[in-house]
Image 1 (spheres, rainbow, N blue to C red):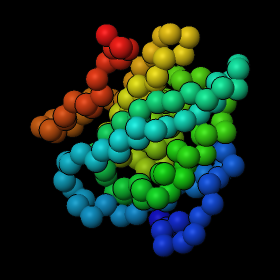
Image 2 (cartoon, helix red, strand yellow; image 1 turned 90 degrees about the vertical axis):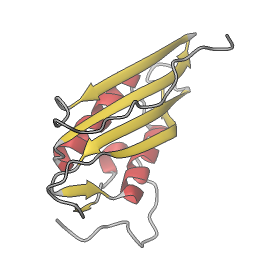
Image 3 (cartoon, one colour; image 1 turned 30 degrees about the vertical axis):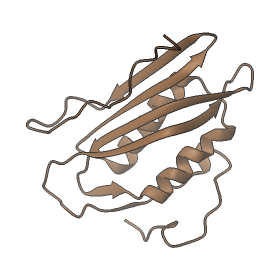
Length: 149
């Protein structure tokens, strides 16, 4: 584990998600099964076909093992999607897989609640496996899309 690159430093938004460096720091409560949640209500990426912006509410839940993700680096990583063209499924699952591969948490899930495109909202979910036994796992708290109804 290295010294965080972004914490306490001025950091520019990465040009792409691939260029983003995620920082991980030691888990302050190793050996404990606790849930960490990041809610990202204003996530933005680009449609790979039209180039128009797509918007989502992401919820990332994980149970740390040896490390936790540093939130400023996560914010910069997610912000790098603003100019990244990818389908909803690729963005959502790719974020979950990258965090899981690099941080190696005990468990991770991501819910991508995408706002309608062409009149159809798309929700994408991925998790690394079953959650640890006995973990308090609250609902992600994002209401299903109802339009104006």
